[in-house]
Length: 201
Picture: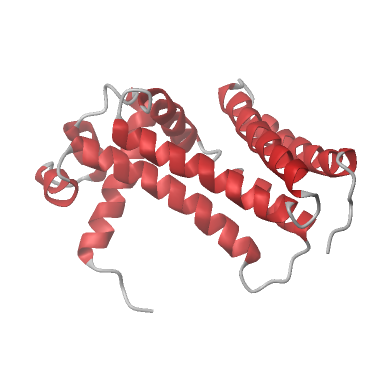
């Protein structure tokens, strides 16, 4: 397998360092110097590769978004899944080891807060919300009539986000994240039963 270009390696090092810096210092106290120090790289590379701190912050959120996408693809690509199985896979993709890690959870919480003030982060958060809803709706439409499928997708997206947020803020996050997956899957099954059609083909 060919080695990735040095540019790609350094960009990932800076993104990883940003996650750690936000975990330790918060978003507002994360600076070019804290990031470059953690990465062990020149601060000038942040401007060179990302155009500055804000560009790197957005690249870090894009990385977390991409990891969500890849987590779902790894569970669905090349496999024939029943709709209910695919819905369960969507839940699992949102609670991977990365997405429930302390650097990722603290960074997500900071992003959500800052997205109210930063247009770029708000756009990325909108993409994230729409992707989750669309993925859920795709599978629910195979199980429920259109109006009920739309309602079920909206309810489940809110349930996943809500459970994730409560778990991230809990004093025992690992235990809460595990419960969150179980409860989210149970909610999906209850919604399907509530709205009628339970066929999974």
